[in-house]
Amino acid sequence: MATARKISDRKLVEAFLATAGIPVDPQLPADWDCTPHDDRPACHRKIWGRPYITSPEVNASKFYELRVLDGGAWDRSSWKGSFDSLSAAKAAAKRVSFHN
Image (tube, rainbow, N blue to C red; front, side):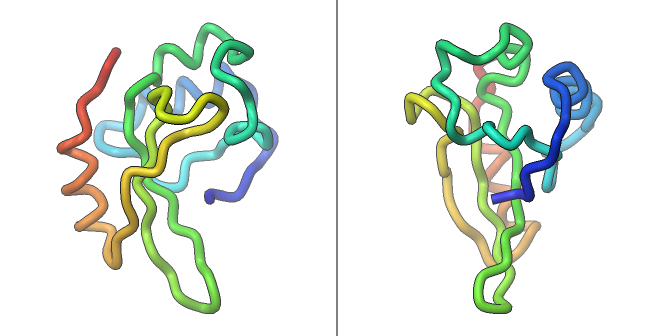
């Protein structure tokens, strides 16, 4: 997962919407992947269905995860795949439909 940082919900949405392509390693609130969707602020609906990519490193091996807040899980973003390269993750992200 992307490193959780303190960021306001408004700034989070602005950052997602300002990104021309797929956001990579966006700043996410600390509770991003442990907040029930019914408890999320209304502004999160603006980025509902919008894919993003994180680049965690595990055992000195970096990979790219494609995730999207789409209701696939009741309290977190949904995992859509892991990839060895950023270009492969971006290609897969383009196939994820937006629900906005």
